[in-house]
View: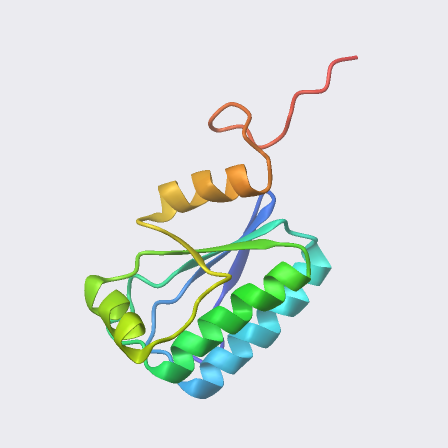
Length: 132
């Protein structure tokens, strides 16, 4: 696989990493996400890393860089599905993921994105109701 699919759902971009990340694929994801964000004007990005068993220092930095880039472009980023071993590795490597917000799973990540971008209407409804 030479790219990771990016799906737009409502106001958000969803990325589910289902393959082992290597450096070139991570850089491609970073480039693709910035292009998709500008093109779609999404307000948030959810990155599911539940399939990743290992995150090395480069991939960890790339996740942080992606979140920083999304933030500069006006979108929030939430990473979900982080395995305990991945969290331990990130901490042991001393990686600073200051712009990365995390949630346990996709549902909690979407809820967090809704709060972060102020779309806290009824569950299941992303848009405020406009009355005439």
